[in-house]
Image (cartoon, rainbow, N blue to C red; front, side, top):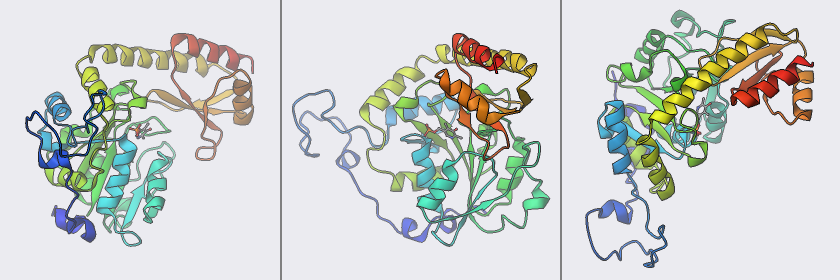
Length: 341
Ligand SMILES: *Cc1c(COP(=O)(O)O)cnc(C)c1O
């Protein structure tokens, strides 16, 4: 059933990609006169490795994949855009989302002139049953599942993700930006058995490197090859590649921080539970919580006056605000301010 040529946009399938200097020759040499670089050493006078070979070696060892199952983007947001360009024929294919969810899917669809089909989550923020959406998702294109979901914080069962993917004639994107904060199993475990699945992860959240702009896509080699074909040649810059190598060689600190953030999350939930201004706290497996307040506007205002900025999600979920988990000290100030409302 999986047929990369039928899923790929025709112009992309037929595209002869740009071939950069570092693509045409990447071996050892003494004198580099092929890329019109400035020969004087500034540490950054040379173009970066277009295929990030050293990084992919480390990442594939870490994730137990082959290097040709790994794609690195200038943040996950670049990868989302590339997926649209690769797998959605504008005004023909569709993109399916389960709102409330991450806003970039819809914006990226609009930028690429692709129609969005919204299949809302149910009251408990769970996916609609397969029977309920079976007919809606008959056409191809892209389908996004964000788990843990932003902004609701919950995860979706992998069996349901798999069932949808197995019956979708297009590419299913499982966005796992927050998976490190979750006790649930990653979709990486169904990657080999699900050829049309792309798992997105990022350095922006658990790794504390949002400024680096590095996101990863894991998928079967045929999908990765299409992304490689259309990406800007030097999409991950030298500084980001170097810093990410360092980060991957120092992963212990990340695990400690994740553990601490999760503990802080649970402590925050416990404190918020008893507050009069709080109506409902949605269970979260991420580094944020979605909270329904009696008077959300007032809470936003009071916090802002104290210099505390949270995210207003009341347009998507009535009365709901999204709070990112801060340090112990930050959370303490947040709680004190909320108690005074
Ligand atoms: C934060 C976030 C990302 C990360 O995007 P980057 O471009 O990698 O920083 C991806 N998906 C979701 C749902 C997010 O909330």
